Length: 385
Figure 1 (spheres, rainbow, N blue to C red):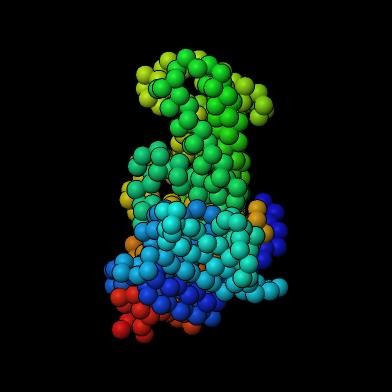
Figure 2: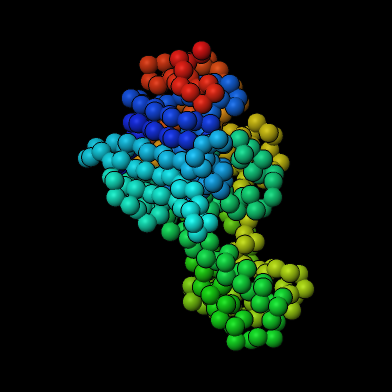
């Protein structure tokens, strides 16, 4: 894959007010590597979560905004970041205002002091990818977990994907409700099934494009001797099979007819049984040519890291922006060879990397290349204190 010249972006300052356990965080960075060190529960991951709010979605924990506000605080929070590029400096703001007289809380987004309509607007300036311990059981867990992981991969290269997925889910809920309450109302069912088909095919096509591009990039750059094994990827699902064979309009028609024919079955099941909500991301351990789920725990972890690193390269190639990478407690579970290999691979990506770990010794190989920052009880302290 021929990658275009990418714009390097770095966060040089992060400020958070009343976010999680941080009352008044003000963190300045000077290097590409930022290592946050402290005991469990100190607030390291909370800092990564604050950074992750500068991309579409609800951040790396997928939490409700209201739950991010500090307990005992005013009920809202504010996070701002100074973003430095080769051409200019930008100030991004993300926050939450607690419910007012109407009983509804409000998400606030700002770019250089001006209101932004949604977090999607941040994608013009910044792309973010991450890996957290929540992904450790990805390959042997439920298909829904892999589907959410897949949509996160797509969202990093296609900022509108999240809105399409949300609209599709709302349309599916409307159809399920109609089947339950008004199963004989053919006119309304026809209308909602047309919407489900249009949105479903759009979601399936976006997923397919990202997976095909990522699989091709991995195949073109694979190295059986690398510390992180390469993965092969494919999508599995009825609608995925349709969009693989038919043009978009024909796939919509065929999906819509399948929805019509499946009304009685879906009503009995209480849910729609075919569509993008049943897609699974199938991953194989490339060098061994076995399903990822059957690999050892250590092999699965290494395979996942390799997949995330490849995805970061894809984001850079497709968006023209070198992504910021968030790694939560990743280095602690690697042997010395793989830990050194991870740091080398991250160095080659040329983007800024924020990492967490309980032991400063995990980052000794980054001495002189990393900002080593201690975190304790929601405060910044000297590393190792």
